[in-house]
Amino acid sequence: MELKYKIQGGNFNRAGYASSEVKKVLKQLNVDPKIIKRIVVALYEGEVNIVAHAFNGLATVTIDAEKIKIVLKDSGPGIPDVEKAMELGFTTASPAVREMGFGAGMGLPNMKKNSDFMEILSTVNVGTEVVLMNYFSK
Amino acid sequence: MKSLYFCLENYTDIIVGIMEMKTIVSEINGTVRVGLDLLQNNVDFAFASDLMSDVLTVEKEDILLITGLANLQTIRTAEMADIRYIIFARGKNIDGQIVQLASENNMVIITTPYSVFRVSGILYQLGIQPVF
Image 1 (tube, rainbow over the protein chains, first blue to last red):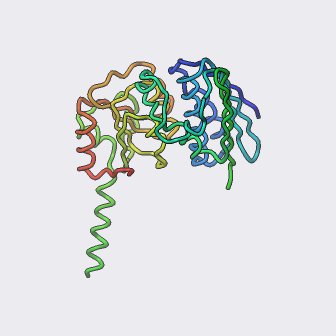
Image 2: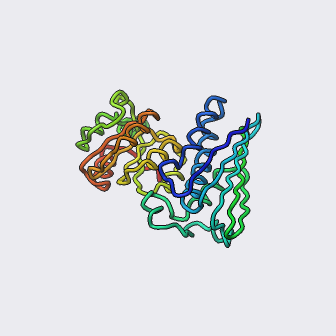
Image 3: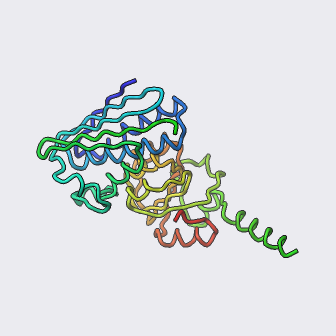
């Protein structure tokens, strides 16, 4: 099963829509609620990152019997130093993002914590691609 | 006899830690905006934060969230974190979009004129337990 969701940079009203839809699908598939929570928290943080930093993005979600793979690809400024961005507390978020309750430098570390596999590929002034993978049973 | 005493004491602690939502509403001078039909539900743990990234790190489910941040992302965060009970402190304005999204997710939304600090103090005194 493949699902695709467009994510619009700067539109906080829509942030979380893809995560909400994916949560509904995983519930219908009777995935363990604790695993659903990990997946949708990671995806939601990813959505917020695109809304906060990029111009636009696409979430491609592939689900099979054993796992879910999420590819979050955006057009945007990119991340100059991925290792630095992964540090807890490091942020480049705007005051507007902070007013929304984010931008404390916790998003990427929390995405890593909540996924079984995470990879970030980024090119400055082009965009960022984040791949997340979670297995339904351990 | 001594061991029985300890046993009863622990049992009392457990009872004190569980609270019906309707009692909480009354103790914090709250107004229920969404979820009137869910007020007989019990909660035993609460977390207070305006930082949604912080809320998203809480692994415990079905907790009560006390916050001063009233926007759609508060509801989205609660949805992803499996939180169904939210108290908005300091009389925050709850708009129609918030009400609708909370309602779709079977949440209880309460507003109160009290501050986050005061609400937290009252609930802690009533025996609601902290997550951390």
